[in-house]
Image (tube, rainbow over the protein chains, first blue to last red):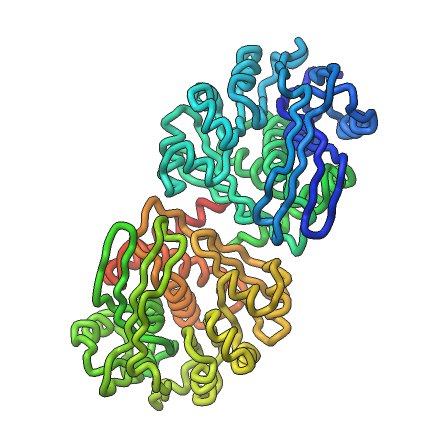
Length: 302
Length: 302
C-alpha cells in the first residue's frame, strides 16, 4: 500500500446507543472510525488508533472495505474503548450512561514510518497531550485539522492552547467556542481563537450547518436538510473526515478548495446520520455524494 | 400619493425593552412599524394599523420619513398598544412583563379605497379573524404573506387554518411550525403546512437564518453573521417587510425573485437588530444594503 496522504488519529470504540426510536448495541464507533470511513470516499486514509483484543474481526474487515490503511492501528491486551449513550426525545441532547476507557486509557498514538511524511492530518478529539505527540512525529504536515471537546478545555487548557497554536484549522462546536474564549458571540469567539494561531476556525452548529472564519472572511456552510435521521453520533467526525479527504485528494487547500471540502463534508455527514454507525456510509456511492452536493448548491444559489 | 403596491397590516405599539445591557422605554414598535420601515427601502408601503390618542406625533413623522402611506392608519380615543419585555442573558429568550392592548383590542383593519387593488400584502401577526377581514377587502392580491404566533395556534386554530388556505406564503418560526403540525422535523412540518394551501412555507430560525420550502424545492437563507447586536425585537417583521418590499418593487415573485427578496430581507433585518426600535433603519442607506447583500452572497459562494 502507498503511504497515505491523510493521517487520521482518534478514538476507536464500541458504541451502545439508544434513541427515542431504537436501541442498538455493539456498534462500531469512535472519531477515527467515522472520519476514516468518510475520508475514504476521496483518499485512502491512514488510521491511528487503538483497540483491545475483544475488537471484532468484522470491524477490521469493514475498515478494509473502506480502504483504510491499518498500519497505525494498535491491538493490545484489554478491552476496546466503549461508550453507552442515550439521545433525548427529538435527538437535541444526549447523555452518557457509561464510558469504559479500556486500552484507550494508555493509548499512545505512535505513527508507523509510512505515515510521518503525510501532508494532511486530522487530529480527532482526544487528550491534547496525545495530539501533540502526533504532531511531534509528523515531518512537515501542510494542513492539520484538530478537534477537541469541553473536557479538555476544562482539564487540559494549557496543552490544548499549545495544540491550537500548531494547527491550520481548529474545529469545535458553539458551546465549546464560548467555553474556551468566554465570548458568547461566535464571531468574537472566533477572533480570539484565530489569535491563538490557526488560520481557520470551523464552528459546528449541527443541523444549522457550520461556519468557517479566517482573517480573510467568513464562509457559511448550511447543513443538508433531512426529512429524517436515525443517529447523529459521529456527524462532526464524518464532516471532518470528508473535508480532509477532499483536501488530500485535490492536494490543495486554498480558500476555494476549503469551501468545496466543507460542502462535501456537510453532505457526507448528512448521509452518515441516516443510519447508525457506519451503516449508511458502507453503502454510499460517489454518485450519491455528487447528487446531494449539487442539490445543496442549488438550495443556496441566489 | 399613488396607491401603494404593498399593503402591510399589523400592530403598532409602544415598546419598553430591557436587554442585559440596556433599558429603553417608549420605543416605536409593532409588526406594522418594523415591516413598513423595512419595505420602504424598496417601495412606499401602505400601512394599516391603529393607534391611540397618546401616540406621539414624532412617530408619525418617522413613518412619513420612511415614505409610509398612512391612509390606513386609524387614530382612536384610548391608549396605544404597549409591550414591556425583558431579554435574558445572551438574548436567546425573552419574557413579556406586561401587555396593554389599548385600542388594539377593538382594532378592525378596514382598508382605505386606495389600498384594495394592491397586488402585494403582508398580514402581520394578529388574530386570524382580522387577517381574514383584510383578505375579504382586497380585490385580487397576487401575493399574500402571513405571519402568526403560538397564541393563535392555541386559541384560534380553525380561523388560522382558513387564513393559511388563502395565502401565498406562510411565515412562522421553528417551534410554531412544530406546534401547528405536531411534526418535530421541519421538512415534515412544512410538508403538512403546504398541504393546507400556501405555495411557500418560510421557516424563521433567528440567527441561524431561514428556510423556504415549496413543492419545487428548498431554499436556505443564512442570516448575516453579526459581531454584536442590540435588540432582536421585530427582526422577523423587518425580514418580512423587506422581502415583500423587494417583491413589490420588482413586480415579480418567481422562484429566483423570492430568493433575492429573502436575501434582502435577511440583510435588512441584520441592520435592524443593530439598534433598538427603528433607529438603525432610520439611518440605513440603499448602498449599505447592497454592500451587505454582496458580502453575504460572497459568504455562501462555493
